[in-house]
Length: 252
Image (cartoon, rainbow, N blue to C red):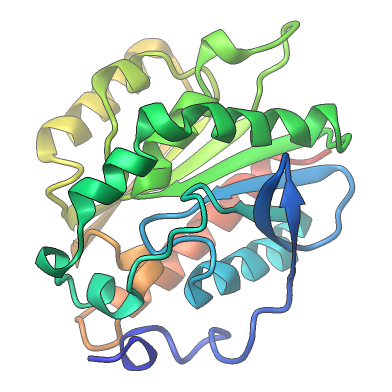
């Protein structure tokens, strides 16, 4: 199955992304929108910052939330094969090598630097973080209580979809409103971790929105495969949920 056939072709996912390429804290970055007060840091999954669906989703967020959306390259220019990821042929990808070069320890510092740059260097008043798969752990880290500076959170709100590499410690330390978009079938975000998330956020008294997506699998919110039952609808529902969430918390 080719990338062009597996990914969303309806709704407003056709055509060419309308944003631009620039840099954010020295990272190559796709940027959509132009609101000078509200920013969203979009941390992509293994498809990476150049994947068309990622950029089209950033365009949606920019238009519908009225935000400037930044999608940096956190993989050092490395781009995995879109078709192999979409077809879940992970045995044909060197994922252990990729993660060894782009894992938490290797990339956390630059993810934090890009987030800090939004308020410090660019003057945004409100900043949200959205992360899918790989971007899930990073979004939780950005929203950790320990990273508030002078009483102000590094990011004001997060939304994560099918997170991976997430730890219980990440969940324990969150200090900003959290949205979780959780596919039913997801080995990267297990039932145990889903329950732990739900119970811990209540204990911490953190405002959260947990949305369950029955019958769909990990990566549905980015891939949007029309040949997998319910996946396209899940992608659209997930986008709409994130838009509503960010609209609520990112009013400058």
